[in-house]
Length: 494
Image (cartoon, rainbow, N blue to C red; front, side):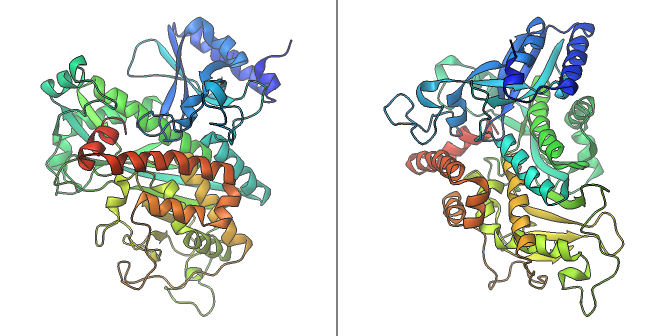
């Protein structure tokens, strides 16, 4: 009898060898538990914890998971009435909270460094009949990368992630776990800062924050993540982690694991890490996620954005003064679909408070050459193998699979239509430029009106995403205290 992995069409000789190797690692390491984890719509890991002896069989036959976990909004309310007739009619396979199956990738195995005798495996959901769950966001990025591959390209990404680390107070932690104060969602933690801020890249502030940053360092490195640096950002208690460039799928996987891992490791040590864009305090700096991206030749790995010399007749304000012709078309595609892609890049209500003038965050649909006020920053110069486009639109809470997929689909549309980029901006906060959406609702409307992105992601997924995010918007609009709503909704979880 064939295994579930074979039924799904993903099991071959290479996977069997990886499975055998991982099972041997689990045994040899004396592990007691193995977590099987999956990334939800909101970019957060969920899953089940198996006893170690069950892991090998689970890699063959999968682990059942209630399908409503794909239908949750940001506070775990199910956005579809799955127990009513027709309540999930537009999403076949999700009726009545039926099961999907989590199938682990044996090559993803890691031993968690912050907890004893525990392994970890990355999973994706499949329907019980062996069909992939097309709403799964990792599957969506894989589909986008297949489209890129058919065109002869691969994608390389580097991550710069700003976030905040706070020290938990004893009383605040006690209150958060007090059953008499439990709610849905529960109390946010009470915290103090790890550095006072407004002294960017300060060695003094780094020394003050070194203890939690060492935890971030050791956790990331123990997991094999390509961490390059840890930095003190401008805002109070704000820091940044910078990662070396990798292929796109690995970059997205690393982002998901990094956020989850550092939150867990830091909490065990009495700290609270949050990837919420603007934590709920009056004097704060917004956090962004800057995505560096380039296309490479599928066969040679050469950077296809690299240019040998400026195109004839160009000035530094022209895209092809720095970028290849392909790079210009890709840049123009990102600009053409900027408003539509914003819902993927900034998926929380809180994130739109970041788009302010003169704040090192974008406000308009513009590009600039090494300009940190522009939405898109072209980095590099002729004969530079590191030439790339940095997108500065995203908040650190974004689902990385959707963020990267939106870049691929927008950029490829520019390539296929051979779009030309306008001149680089020298006034990124100028009044005349087209503005980015200023709310999640506006961003969703822009996405729904973007025909190319709707076709690329599929109307079923766009409608599904919009419905779940609209539930979040509605609950926020009905809250008696919208600011307190954000403290409960985002600060604890994100």
